[in-house]
Image 1 (cartoon, rainbow, N blue to C red):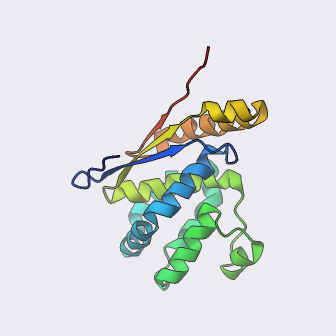
Image 2: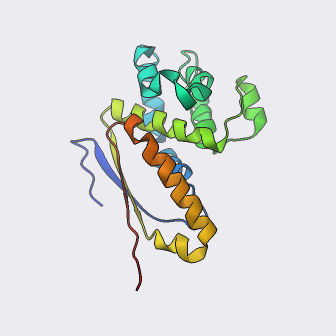
Amino acid sequence: YKTYPELGVSVQYSRADVERTDLVLFLLKIVQDKYLPDLINIVKLLRQTTDAIPGMVNNYESNFREIKDYTQELFKQEHSDEVITELLYLGTGRLYNKRYFDKFNLEQLKDFNRREILVLFLNLLSNHSKYIIFAIDEIEKIREKSKIRFNHFLTSYRELVDLFNQIKGHYLLVSFTMLI
């Protein structure tokens, strides 16, 4: 799949994962795997002038207030690349044990909070002219596996659509084939 580095656009194509039906967590994993070095560099740049950060998280209003402490911790000046990486992993869910959160004196994030974390991470990328087109194919595989999994996928999809007005400059394409 083509990327257009001169425009800051990349396409991340994936087949649907029947084991991971929460679309937000699925997209966070892609962001973690493909854009971690970019996020580290952006955090280091933005922590010099933190006035842009609240605009990326809906000024901590509504559900975004639940990630305020996490966001402020992420942008602390004294953090090394390793600490920033650890904090990003707390955001994506790669690190989720309470002791990791206790290390930073943070309340443990729940999977539900990851919706706002995804908004933050995507807005960090777009703030530095990096845009992702997420292309998720073969959604029908989830439906074939189980109706419960498919309903979970659709719920997470609707939750993500509700957040679209908060996410700047990224696209989500999904493909579902109906067999007759």
